[in-house]
Length: 261
Image 1 (spheres, rainbow, N blue to C red):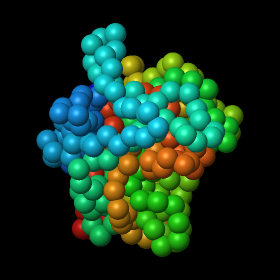
Image 2: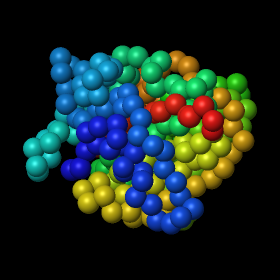
Image 3: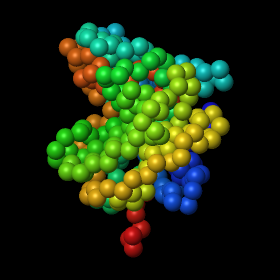
Image 4: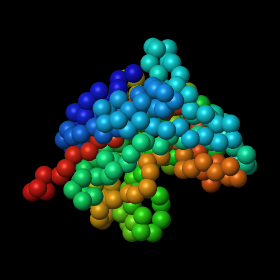
């Protein structure tokens, strides 16, 4: 595993580009980093900001810390899929969210990423949320990573307009049992990017996808959620967007735009 150990490393990861059209933000501040460790029943934040994650569960679901072949831990979420309740449910909520709002009044550059491994066939009907702040809906800002039907995508919204940026061709899916690094980047107030790399080697597996969008301030509210949308006993995966599989090295980093940008 090649974890990002500093905020500068976050930028270095997104700096390895396929062509001159792609760009990356300069180094900034790492605000959250979950590397798979549990401390006192919470997911430990190794960024130094103390945003340890509470584990919320239902229907017998759990989040456990597992050790890989190299001894490094990762987070395991409920496996399989569940179309009809009751369903095993498990999500993580960081202790705070205010530092995960973009800088500069919601216009700032920021990057969020996760190592992802699917442990079973993805449901063709239900979404799988990985990492999000804010909900999808009118008047609600959001940043989000998901692997619906096994295909990674990133979403950003200012509550009126949104950018939904999937990775690769329409038929692309993450291969079960293989680790991937997925990174979502707001390169500027109106330029967005997703990239997919091999988690262990850092090699790009797809050309970075970029898209522009006329978004205003991105100012999410509520709680950051990892591994699903919510815990709701009477709902199945199609309503909760429960993630099924393994996650590691979940990170959020940001920097303020220069005053002359």
